[in-house]
Length: 238
Image 1 (spheres, rainbow, N blue to C red):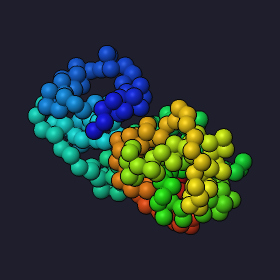
Image 2 (cartoon, one colour):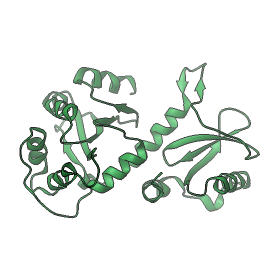
Image 3 (cartoon, rainbow, N blue to C red):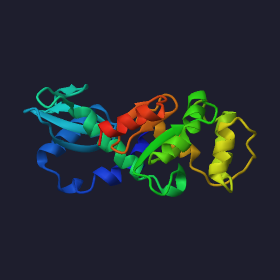
């Protein structure tokens, strides 16, 4: 886990008031920190199941026994409500992180009457990312705004990484993004850009491929979704 990035994006969102946390929470924090000193605990609260505490580790969730001895990793399912409680907590944590990204760092495609916003980790060399970008006019016309974040799959030493830096440094980022998605040569450009930060953030959030889409509630949709299916997913989680 990239603790520095997790700390930067999540500590300010979740740790306000830690100094005044209950004694039980402090003891549990000490217990898990002793066992896993490299993990950043961003929240502790009582879980829906008696005797368990929910512990947020960045945007991941685990459960701890009230004596701090046992840790449980897995999804907590509410059978009565038929909901994945753990995934709801993860989604909320992801959303806080994504909403904390400055608008100046993303490349946005949106119509003035946009009703929904999705965050998309993208790679300009990815075939399905290019297909998603070809869907952009339809998505925008149906009220979906797209906020692009960079995730060059080949890593920081790749040509795609440098090209994506040039896209983010272009005078007209949207035009540069569209050209790159069409396979056109990217005009080299240098500036202070967020590509490395986005790449590391994607790894922290668990991005494994592109495109990875996050809905406005923080739900993760790995892989390409055609417009009709993406609109169905948005409607499902409203």
